Length: 265
Image (cartoon, rainbow, N blue to C red):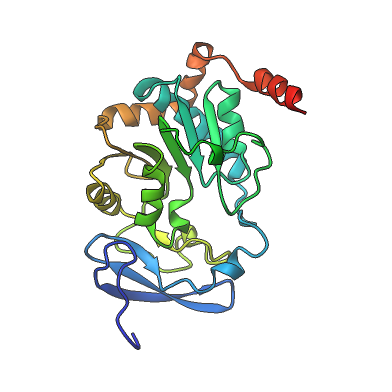
C-alpha cells in the first residue's frame, strides 16, 4: 500500500490488501481484509456518487421481485413465531417500497424508510413521522453491503427498535478474487462491505445484541435471545411457503389502506 495504512471501517483494526478489482469498468479498486472482525471491504469508496447517479437500485438487480416475495414469506414466519404480530414494523433502506406493500398486504403494520430511493409502492406509509415509535422489528434487506460505516447504520436502526432482520450474503474465506464471486457487484460499484458470520457477531457484541444466522444470507440481531433453531425453522418455513398457512391469523391491509388513502384524497 502507499501512504498511511488504511484501517477497518468497522473495528478500526489493521487491513490486509488482497487484490485489485475493476469497478464500474474503469476504476481499479483495492479489496482489503480485516483479520480482527472479518469485514472484507473495498478501499474508501470515492466512486459512490457515480455508482448511484442513475438509480439507487442497480441495473443488474433482476432478482428484486423474486427476492422480495421470498423475504415476505420468511419475515412473516419470523414475526408470527418470534415477535408480536400486532406491533409496528419498519423496513430500513426499503428501496421502492415493494417489501412494505407486500407485508401490509399480509396484514402487518409495516412502514418504509430510505433516504436514497423513491417510495413508489408504499406512499403514505413512510416511517419518518413515527420518530417516537419503538418498532417491534426492523428489516433491512440487501443493504449492509452498501454501508460505508456499518456500526453507525446499525445505531440508526437501534434508535428505533431492538431487533433487526437483515439479509446479506456471507463472504467466503479465503476471499474470492473479483470475477469469481458475483456479490462484489463490480459492474455497478455499490457493494463495498462484505461480512462473515464473525463480523456480524462482532457487530452484535459491540451493541449488546444476540445473533441468530443461517450462516448464508439471513441474519437476526436482537436485544433478546432467539434460539438459532427457531430462527432457522422460520427461514425454512418461509422459503418453502409454509407461511401461507398462517395468513388467516392477520387481516390483509390492502383494502383498508385503499379506503384510508381514498378518504384523505
